[in-house]
Amino acid sequence: MNKIEKLLPYSLKAAQRFITIDEGKLSVPKQFKGYISSFGASVIQSGLMPTLAFYSDAKKAKGDRSLLVPALIDILFQNESYPIDIEVQKKLDDLDKDKEKDMKQIVHYFFAWLLEANSENPQKLRKELMDASIALKLALRTFREVDNDKKKKS
Image 1: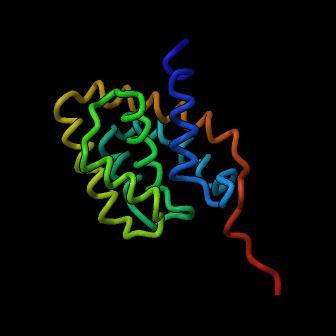
Image 2 (image 1 turned 30 degrees about the vertical axis):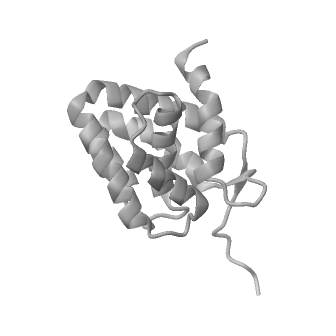
């Protein structure tokens, strides 16, 4: 079993926890497939930290792309790529319960943790996040796409 196949079950769980938008946890905003598809290309072109900063920009984009950051961190923890940081895990659990929280503060906390992890071993973090993003991209294919931004006709 290759690395991506090993990450698929964790990616499905992370997508259900952080990205789904319905009670049955079967639908994701249409925009997320584009966000995750461009993640790898952005890492290659701009670098890991600028890409993570871009994706940490909460509420600036349709579908709130900042939810990809906790999903990717959750995959890293589930795969045991990094030891679980108790404070980060607590924030992940809080976000899982209430996605309407103040995302700027929470995602800023995640970004700070990623900066610290990057300073310890930048190549490892880059490789692990790239693998997690590929697995998440594949996992998102199993969910229904919902276009939340369609204008309602009166």
